[in-house]
Image (cartoon, rainbow, N blue to C red; front, top):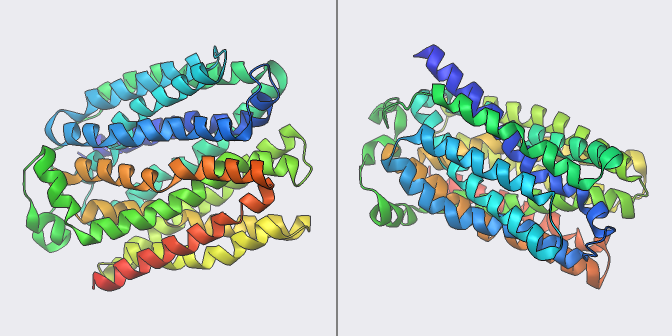
Length: 407
Protein backbone atom coordinates (compact mmCIF):
# COMPACT_ATOMS: atom_id res chain seq x y z
CA UNK A 1 0.00 0.00 0.00
CA UNK A 2 2.89 2.35 0.75
CA UNK A 3 4.48 1.65 -2.63
CA UNK A 4 1.14 2.18 -4.36
CA UNK A 5 0.59 5.45 -2.52
CA UNK A 6 4.13 6.59 -3.32
CA UNK A 7 3.68 5.77 -7.00
CA UNK A 8 0.38 7.64 -7.02
CA UNK A 9 1.95 10.73 -5.43
CA UNK A 10 4.90 10.61 -7.83
CA UNK A 11 2.82 10.27 -11.00
CA UNK A 12 0.20 12.84 -10.00
CA UNK A 13 2.88 15.34 -8.95
CA UNK A 14 4.69 14.87 -12.26
CA UNK A 15 1.44 15.42 -14.15
CA UNK A 16 0.69 18.46 -11.99
CA UNK A 17 4.10 19.82 -12.98
CA UNK A 18 3.13 19.51 -16.63
CA UNK A 19 -0.30 20.94 -15.80
CA UNK A 20 1.20 24.21 -14.60
CA UNK A 21 3.87 24.27 -17.31
CA UNK A 22 1.13 24.13 -19.96
CA UNK A 23 -0.99 26.63 -18.06
CA UNK A 24 1.68 29.29 -17.68
CA UNK A 25 3.80 28.92 -20.78
CA UNK A 26 1.65 31.53 -22.50
CA UNK A 27 2.75 34.13 -19.93
CA UNK A 28 6.31 33.88 -21.27
CA UNK A 29 5.05 34.40 -24.82
CA UNK A 30 2.77 37.43 -24.35
CA UNK A 31 5.15 40.04 -25.70
CA UNK A 32 6.09 37.91 -28.71
CA UNK A 33 2.44 37.19 -29.50
CA UNK A 34 1.56 40.88 -29.09
CA UNK A 35 4.28 41.88 -31.57
CA UNK A 36 3.49 39.03 -34.00
CA UNK A 37 1.26 38.98 -37.07
CA UNK A 38 -1.73 38.35 -34.77
CA UNK A 39 -1.64 42.04 -33.64
CA UNK A 40 -3.30 41.51 -30.24
CA UNK A 41 -3.58 44.20 -27.54
CA UNK A 42 -3.30 43.75 -23.76
CA UNK A 43 -7.06 43.45 -23.31
CA UNK A 44 -7.22 40.58 -25.82
CA UNK A 45 -4.20 38.89 -24.25
CA UNK A 46 -5.89 39.17 -20.87
CA UNK A 47 -9.07 37.62 -22.27
CA UNK A 48 -7.10 34.66 -23.65
CA UNK A 49 -5.80 34.02 -20.15
CA UNK A 50 -9.33 34.20 -18.78
CA UNK A 51 -10.75 31.94 -21.53
CA UNK A 52 -8.82 28.97 -20.19
CA UNK A 53 -9.85 29.71 -16.62
CA UNK A 54 -13.54 30.21 -17.50
CA UNK A 55 -13.76 26.77 -19.12
CA UNK A 56 -11.67 25.23 -16.34
CA UNK A 57 -13.91 26.55 -13.57
CA UNK A 58 -17.14 25.75 -15.46
CA UNK A 59 -16.11 22.14 -16.13
CA UNK A 60 -14.64 21.50 -12.67
CA UNK A 61 -17.93 20.90 -10.77
CA UNK A 62 -18.95 18.36 -13.42
CA UNK A 63 -15.70 16.44 -13.18
CA UNK A 64 -15.77 16.81 -9.39
CA UNK A 65 -19.11 15.00 -9.31
CA UNK A 66 -17.82 12.31 -11.68
CA UNK A 67 -14.73 11.95 -9.52
CA UNK A 68 -16.88 11.14 -6.48
CA UNK A 69 -18.93 8.53 -8.36
CA UNK A 70 -16.68 6.95 -11.01
CA UNK A 71 -13.25 5.33 -11.25
CA UNK A 72 -10.76 8.17 -10.99
CA UNK A 73 -7.60 7.12 -12.92
CA UNK A 74 -9.35 6.91 -16.35
CA UNK A 75 -10.81 10.40 -15.85
CA UNK A 76 -7.35 11.74 -14.99
CA UNK A 77 -5.76 10.12 -18.06
CA UNK A 78 -8.45 11.56 -20.31
CA UNK A 79 -7.88 15.05 -18.91
CA UNK A 80 -4.12 14.90 -19.48
CA UNK A 81 -4.61 13.87 -23.11
CA UNK A 82 -7.15 16.62 -23.83
CA UNK A 83 -5.08 19.49 -22.44
CA UNK A 84 -1.89 18.23 -24.14
CA UNK A 85 -3.55 18.14 -27.56
CA UNK A 86 -5.09 21.59 -26.99
CA UNK A 87 -1.72 23.08 -25.99
CA UNK A 88 -0.18 21.75 -29.19
CA UNK A 89 -3.00 23.22 -31.30
CA UNK A 90 -2.35 26.69 -29.84
CA UNK A 91 0.87 26.73 -31.87
CA UNK A 92 -1.21 26.72 -35.07
CA UNK A 93 -3.38 29.74 -34.14
CA UNK A 94 -4.08 32.27 -36.89
CA UNK A 95 -5.81 34.97 -34.85
CA UNK A 96 -7.47 35.87 -31.57
CA UNK A 97 -10.38 33.44 -32.01
CA UNK A 98 -8.31 30.35 -32.77
CA UNK A 99 -5.80 31.06 -29.99
CA UNK A 100 -8.63 31.74 -27.53
CA UNK A 101 -10.37 28.47 -28.52
CA UNK A 102 -7.21 26.38 -28.13
CA UNK A 103 -6.35 27.83 -24.73
CA UNK A 104 -9.95 27.50 -23.55
CA UNK A 105 -9.96 23.80 -24.46
CA UNK A 106 -6.93 23.29 -22.20
CA UNK A 107 -9.34 24.11 -19.36
CA UNK A 108 -11.48 21.02 -20.06
CA UNK A 109 -8.54 18.68 -19.72
CA UNK A 110 -7.18 20.34 -16.61
CA UNK A 111 -10.62 20.31 -14.95
CA UNK A 112 -10.73 16.51 -15.31
CA UNK A 113 -7.38 16.24 -13.56
CA UNK A 114 -7.24 19.16 -11.14
CA UNK A 115 -10.48 18.34 -9.32
CA UNK A 116 -9.90 14.61 -8.92
CA UNK A 117 -6.20 14.27 -8.09
CA UNK A 118 -6.24 15.97 -4.63
CA UNK A 119 -9.22 13.87 -3.52
CA UNK A 120 -7.50 10.68 -4.66
CA UNK A 121 -4.36 11.63 -2.72
CA UNK A 122 -6.44 12.31 0.40
CA UNK A 123 -7.70 8.72 0.22
CA UNK A 124 -4.18 7.33 -0.31
CA UNK A 125 -2.56 8.97 2.76
CA UNK A 126 -3.60 9.38 6.42
CA UNK A 127 -5.05 12.62 7.77
CA UNK A 128 -1.97 13.69 9.72
CA UNK A 129 0.24 13.54 6.60
CA UNK A 130 -1.99 15.40 4.17
CA UNK A 131 -0.34 18.77 4.66
CA UNK A 132 3.03 17.38 3.60
CA UNK A 133 1.59 15.18 0.83
CA UNK A 134 -0.38 18.05 -0.71
CA UNK A 135 2.63 20.29 -0.16
CA UNK A 136 4.64 17.95 -2.40
CA UNK A 137 1.79 17.75 -4.91
CA UNK A 138 1.31 21.52 -5.06
CA UNK A 139 5.02 22.28 -5.29
CA UNK A 140 4.28 21.70 -8.96
CA UNK A 141 2.56 25.11 -8.99
CA UNK A 142 5.77 27.16 -8.72
CA UNK A 143 8.11 24.62 -10.30
CA UNK A 144 5.83 23.87 -13.25
CA UNK A 145 5.03 27.55 -13.70
CA UNK A 146 8.74 28.40 -13.59
CA UNK A 147 9.45 25.70 -16.17
CA UNK A 148 6.75 27.24 -18.35
CA UNK A 149 8.37 30.66 -18.16
CA UNK A 150 11.89 29.35 -18.78
CA UNK A 151 11.01 26.80 -21.46
CA UNK A 152 8.70 29.25 -23.21
CA UNK A 153 11.24 32.05 -23.13
CA UNK A 154 14.13 29.92 -24.42
CA UNK A 155 12.17 28.12 -27.14
CA UNK A 156 10.58 31.40 -28.20
CA UNK A 157 13.99 33.04 -28.45
CA UNK A 158 15.43 30.33 -30.72
CA UNK A 159 12.44 28.87 -32.57
CA UNK A 160 9.50 31.25 -32.11
CA UNK A 161 6.42 31.31 -29.88
CA UNK A 162 4.53 28.68 -31.88
CA UNK A 163 7.22 26.06 -31.27
CA UNK A 164 6.96 26.68 -27.53
CA UNK A 165 3.37 25.38 -27.52
CA UNK A 166 4.37 22.31 -29.52
CA UNK A 167 7.24 21.44 -27.17
CA UNK A 168 5.01 21.89 -24.09
CA UNK A 169 2.09 19.83 -25.40
CA UNK A 170 3.75 16.63 -26.58
CA UNK A 171 4.95 15.09 -23.25
CA UNK A 172 1.44 14.91 -21.83
CA UNK A 173 0.48 12.03 -24.10
CA UNK A 174 3.26 9.94 -22.55
CA UNK A 175 2.39 10.90 -18.99
CA UNK A 176 -1.24 9.88 -19.52
CA UNK A 177 -0.02 6.29 -19.97
CA UNK A 178 1.60 6.29 -16.51
CA UNK A 179 -1.83 6.75 -14.95
CA UNK A 180 -2.60 3.12 -15.81
CA UNK A 181 -0.52 2.09 -12.79
CA UNK A 182 -2.33 4.39 -10.34
CA UNK A 183 -4.58 2.56 -7.85
CA UNK A 184 -7.97 3.99 -6.91
CA UNK A 185 -8.21 3.60 -3.10
CA UNK A 186 -11.60 3.34 -1.36
CA UNK A 187 -13.06 6.74 -0.53
CA UNK A 188 -12.56 7.60 3.12
CA UNK A 189 -10.19 4.68 3.67
CA UNK A 190 -7.73 6.86 5.60
CA UNK A 191 -10.32 8.71 7.71
CA UNK A 192 -11.76 8.17 11.17
CA UNK A 193 -13.97 10.30 13.38
CA UNK A 194 -11.02 10.89 15.70
CA UNK A 195 -8.60 11.98 13.01
CA UNK A 196 -10.86 13.41 10.35
CA UNK A 197 -13.14 15.59 12.43
CA UNK A 198 -16.05 17.01 10.47
CA UNK A 199 -15.07 15.26 7.26
CA UNK A 200 -15.37 11.76 8.71
CA UNK A 201 -18.27 12.50 11.00
CA UNK A 202 -20.53 13.71 8.20
CA UNK A 203 -19.51 10.92 5.85
CA UNK A 204 -22.54 11.22 3.60
CA UNK A 205 -22.28 9.28 0.37
CA UNK A 206 -24.65 11.52 -1.55
CA UNK A 207 -23.51 12.73 -4.95
CA UNK A 208 -24.36 15.24 -7.62
CA UNK A 209 -26.51 18.25 -6.77
CA UNK A 210 -27.28 17.02 -3.24
CA UNK A 211 -23.59 16.88 -2.37
CA UNK A 212 -22.97 20.29 -3.96
CA UNK A 213 -25.79 21.92 -1.99
CA UNK A 214 -24.58 20.30 1.21
CA UNK A 215 -21.07 21.64 0.63
CA UNK A 216 -22.33 25.14 -0.19
CA UNK A 217 -23.97 25.26 3.23
CA UNK A 218 -20.58 24.56 4.84
CA UNK A 219 -19.36 27.98 6.02
CA UNK A 220 -15.83 26.72 6.71
CA UNK A 221 -15.52 25.48 3.14
CA UNK A 222 -16.93 28.74 1.71
CA UNK A 223 -14.57 30.98 3.67
CA UNK A 224 -11.56 28.84 2.75
CA UNK A 225 -12.58 28.98 -0.92
CA UNK A 226 -13.22 32.76 -0.89
CA UNK A 227 -9.81 33.41 0.67
CA UNK A 228 -8.35 31.11 -1.96
CA UNK A 229 -10.07 33.23 -4.63
CA UNK A 230 -8.27 36.37 -3.46
CA UNK A 231 -4.99 34.43 -3.32
CA UNK A 232 -5.63 33.17 -6.87
CA UNK A 233 -6.44 36.71 -8.07
CA UNK A 234 -3.01 37.84 -6.87
CA UNK A 235 -1.06 34.78 -8.06
CA UNK A 236 -2.90 34.70 -11.38
CA UNK A 237 -2.36 38.39 -12.06
CA UNK A 238 1.31 38.29 -11.08
CA UNK A 239 2.06 35.07 -12.90
CA UNK A 240 0.40 36.15 -16.15
CA UNK A 241 1.71 39.70 -16.38
CA UNK A 242 5.03 39.69 -14.48
CA UNK A 243 7.29 38.79 -17.45
CA UNK A 244 5.73 41.65 -19.43
CA UNK A 245 6.11 43.93 -16.38
CA UNK A 246 9.82 43.13 -16.11
CA UNK A 247 10.28 43.92 -19.80
CA UNK A 248 8.28 47.14 -20.01
CA UNK A 249 8.75 48.64 -16.56
CA UNK A 250 12.10 47.21 -15.41
CA UNK A 251 13.78 47.30 -18.83
CA UNK A 252 14.82 43.64 -19.07
CA UNK A 253 15.13 41.77 -22.34
CA UNK A 254 12.52 39.13 -23.15
CA UNK A 255 14.84 36.23 -22.28
CA UNK A 256 16.03 37.91 -19.08
CA UNK A 257 12.47 38.57 -17.90
CA UNK A 258 11.16 35.04 -18.47
CA UNK A 259 14.21 33.18 -17.15
CA UNK A 260 14.70 35.47 -14.13
CA UNK A 261 11.08 35.34 -13.03
CA UNK A 262 10.95 31.61 -13.72
CA UNK A 263 14.00 31.00 -11.53
CA UNK A 264 12.56 33.16 -8.72
CA UNK A 265 9.19 31.38 -8.91
CA UNK A 266 10.88 27.97 -8.83
CA UNK A 267 13.14 28.67 -5.85
CA UNK A 268 10.59 30.55 -3.77
CA UNK A 269 7.85 28.10 -4.63
CA UNK A 270 9.90 25.11 -3.51
CA UNK A 271 10.84 26.80 -0.24
CA UNK A 272 7.38 28.20 0.48
CA UNK A 273 5.32 25.15 -0.47
CA UNK A 274 7.45 22.67 1.49
CA UNK A 275 7.52 25.03 4.49
CA UNK A 276 3.74 25.42 4.35
CA UNK A 277 3.13 21.67 4.30
CA UNK A 278 5.44 21.15 7.26
CA UNK A 279 4.03 24.06 9.30
CA UNK A 280 0.44 23.04 8.66
CA UNK A 281 1.05 19.49 9.93
CA UNK A 282 3.24 20.67 12.83
CA UNK A 283 0.66 23.06 14.30
CA UNK A 284 -2.13 20.52 13.73
CA UNK A 285 -1.16 19.13 17.14
CA UNK A 286 -2.28 22.41 18.73
CA UNK A 287 -5.30 23.36 16.64
CA UNK A 288 -7.45 21.71 13.99
CA UNK A 289 -7.44 25.07 12.17
CA UNK A 290 -3.66 25.12 11.70
CA UNK A 291 -3.93 24.93 7.90
CA UNK A 292 -6.02 28.10 7.79
CA UNK A 293 -3.93 29.94 10.39
CA UNK A 294 -0.71 29.20 8.51
CA UNK A 295 -2.29 30.31 5.23
CA UNK A 296 -3.82 33.49 6.63
CA UNK A 297 -0.87 34.76 8.65
CA UNK A 298 1.76 34.08 5.98
CA UNK A 299 -0.39 35.78 3.34
CA UNK A 300 -0.90 38.91 5.45
CA UNK A 301 2.84 39.18 6.04
CA UNK A 302 3.41 38.86 2.28
CA UNK A 303 1.27 41.90 1.37
CA UNK A 304 3.73 44.74 2.26
CA UNK A 305 6.62 42.93 0.58
CA UNK A 306 4.51 42.57 -2.58
CA UNK A 307 3.80 46.32 -2.56
CA UNK A 308 7.52 47.12 -2.26
CA UNK A 309 8.38 44.68 -5.05
CA UNK A 310 5.95 46.42 -7.42
CA UNK A 311 6.79 50.02 -6.55
CA UNK A 312 10.47 50.31 -5.63
CA UNK A 313 12.72 51.50 -8.50
CA UNK A 314 15.83 49.99 -6.88
CA UNK A 315 16.74 46.67 -8.52
CA UNK A 316 18.15 44.96 -5.41
CA UNK A 317 15.22 46.19 -3.30
CA UNK A 318 12.41 45.03 -5.57
CA UNK A 319 14.02 41.66 -6.27
CA UNK A 320 14.61 41.01 -2.55
CA UNK A 321 11.04 42.02 -1.73
CA UNK A 322 9.68 39.85 -4.56
CA UNK A 323 11.58 36.79 -3.31
CA UNK A 324 10.35 37.23 0.27
CA UNK A 325 6.77 37.90 -0.89
CA UNK A 326 6.65 34.80 -3.09
CA UNK A 327 8.02 32.51 -0.36
CA UNK A 328 5.32 33.78 2.02
CA UNK A 329 2.55 33.53 -0.57
CA UNK A 330 3.46 29.97 -1.61
CA UNK A 331 3.35 28.80 2.02
CA UNK A 332 -0.45 28.70 1.59
CA UNK A 333 -0.53 26.38 -1.43
CA UNK A 334 -0.62 23.07 0.45
CA UNK A 335 -2.36 24.06 3.71
CA UNK A 336 -5.38 25.76 2.15
CA UNK A 337 -6.09 22.75 -0.07
CA UNK A 338 -5.77 20.50 2.97
CA UNK A 339 -8.27 22.75 4.79
CA UNK A 340 -10.75 22.51 1.90
CA UNK A 341 -10.48 18.72 1.67
CA UNK A 342 -10.75 18.21 5.43
CA UNK A 343 -13.81 20.48 5.69
CA UNK A 344 -16.06 18.01 3.84
CA UNK A 345 -16.96 14.32 3.91
CA UNK A 346 -14.74 11.75 2.13
CA UNK A 347 -17.39 11.06 -0.53
CA UNK A 348 -17.73 14.78 -1.26
CA UNK A 349 -14.07 15.68 -1.73
CA UNK A 350 -13.80 15.73 -5.52
CA UNK A 351 -17.08 17.66 -5.65
CA UNK A 352 -15.71 20.09 -3.07
CA UNK A 353 -12.49 20.58 -5.03
CA UNK A 354 -14.57 21.17 -8.16
CA UNK A 355 -16.69 23.77 -6.39
CA UNK A 356 -13.61 25.41 -4.91
CA UNK A 357 -12.14 25.68 -8.41
CA UNK A 358 -15.36 27.36 -9.54
CA UNK A 359 -15.35 29.85 -6.65
CA UNK A 360 -11.62 30.58 -6.64
CA UNK A 361 -11.39 31.22 -10.36
CA UNK A 362 -14.74 32.98 -10.72
CA UNK A 363 -13.58 35.60 -8.22
CA UNK A 364 -9.85 35.05 -8.76
CA UNK A 365 -7.82 34.88 -11.94
CA UNK A 366 -10.78 35.02 -14.35
CA UNK A 367 -11.25 38.72 -13.59
CA UNK A 368 -7.60 39.31 -12.64
CA UNK A 369 -5.92 39.00 -16.04
CA UNK A 370 -8.39 41.14 -18.07
CA UNK A 371 -8.77 43.70 -15.26
CA UNK A 372 -5.02 44.21 -15.10
CA UNK A 373 -4.87 44.27 -18.91
CA UNK A 374 -7.67 46.84 -19.11
CA UNK A 375 -6.09 49.01 -16.41
CA UNK A 376 -2.78 48.72 -18.23
CA UNK A 377 -4.33 49.93 -21.50
CA UNK A 378 -5.96 52.84 -19.63
CA UNK A 379 -2.93 53.83 -17.51
CA UNK A 380 0.21 51.69 -17.33
CA UNK A 381 1.12 48.17 -16.29
CA UNK A 382 2.94 49.29 -13.14
CA UNK A 383 -0.15 51.17 -11.91
CA UNK A 384 -2.45 48.30 -12.86
CA UNK A 385 -0.37 45.95 -10.70
CA UNK A 386 -1.19 47.89 -7.51
CA UNK A 387 -4.45 45.93 -7.27
CA UNK A 388 -2.46 42.78 -6.42
CA UNK A 389 -1.40 43.67 -2.82
CA UNK A 390 -5.03 44.54 -2.06
CA UNK A 391 -6.15 41.06 -3.11
CA UNK A 392 -3.41 39.49 -0.97
CA UNK A 393 -4.60 41.36 2.13
CA UNK A 394 -8.22 40.30 1.54
CA UNK A 395 -7.21 36.64 1.17
CA UNK A 396 -5.23 36.67 4.42
CA UNK A 397 -8.04 38.35 6.35
CA UNK A 398 -10.67 35.88 5.12
CA UNK A 399 -8.53 32.87 6.07
CA UNK A 400 -7.83 34.25 9.54
CA UNK A 401 -11.56 34.84 10.04
CA UNK A 402 -12.28 31.26 8.92
CA UNK A 403 -9.69 29.89 11.33
CA UNK A 404 -11.10 31.97 14.21
CA UNK A 405 -14.68 30.88 13.48
CA UNK A 406 -13.62 27.26 13.17
CA UNK A 407 -12.23 27.05 16.69
